[in-house]
Length: 207
Image (cartoon, rainbow, N blue to C red; front, side, top):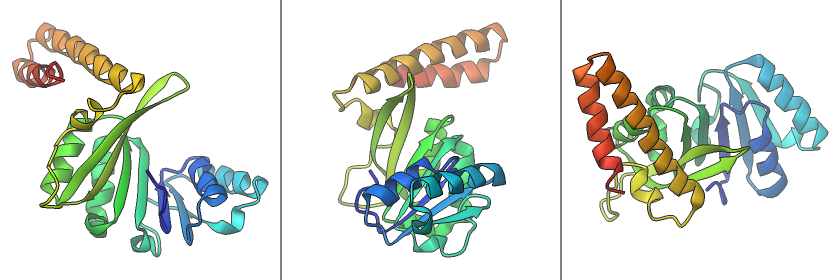
């Protein structure tokens, strides 16, 4: 999804594996790697040095996109955190609404993030699921709203079109987890939560 990016920012970079990959395989003019904690940044720097690409990457210990020249990015990757946290990062960096592409990897609150993006001028252009070490990860490709393109709101609207076992398993897993959550809500007599989850389940079962 990040191919062709000229200025790439990786937020929540952890050990810097993505920026290192970009430095080794892409011709990006600038690569930014940001993380909230200094520990992962230090590890990322050492990893970049070991791979001989340290000079190609700019490292920042900061919150989200709160680093110099972040707004130069045409490609922004934010992963490894919840949907609400991702929305908060984008809310503080309003320039991202005009960014060429955002690649988002929410670990929770998928639907809430998709709805927030749509309401705030972003457009879901594609979605996919990857399997890594036996775990499934959702990836969203986001761009600016385009009146000429069909507006599909939820990740599953794209995932269902993929001929991929990971995508198939993603939807099955969401249905399973939603059923379990409904059972818990009913047991707790939380009627409001149960109703919302049932609505979600009805939508998932249509895919």
